[in-house]
Image (cartoon, rainbow, N blue to C red; front, side, top):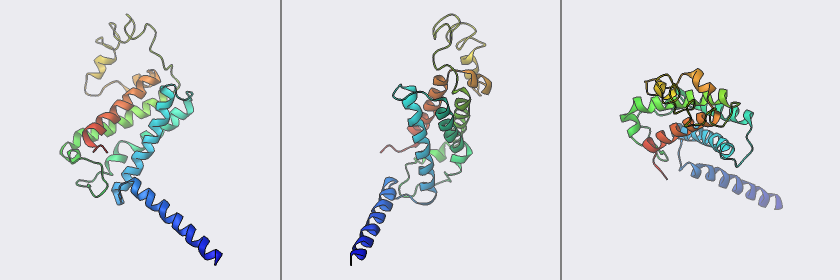
Length: 194
């Protein structure tokens, strides 16, 4: 009798855990759940890095590299393939604008992959602003620098943005901000807020 009660308790607990996972994704199944799980992995990686860059946790180069690798692996074509046209089944947080603006959505996914790869490379770089400060003569806003014709903004204003080599040499905090901005741009435009 005790074993039947124990078995019933274990089965009840198991069922509640499974239903809790399903409810966490709003009942999503199939490809919608797959992409939501992937996004959850990226969210956890972003949170760990955000805590470090905001000073809530000690900065650890290897943790940043690992978290950036998770985002890189789950972005680009890895994420776009999980958005077949019209996949708005129950639980999806995707807006139909994704398919109306597919090229833009795909560009953001590829940009996220590129920036997260650069973040992994830049993780060990100084997290502070470059010598001369952000507004100084040799800093980001001075001539020949970020705003100058040969600087980063000059490159960024083109269609490709900064080169991969330039991204890898930037302070890690700046590259992290580019990753964050890309995530935010995509979510603002293509995700239904809870």
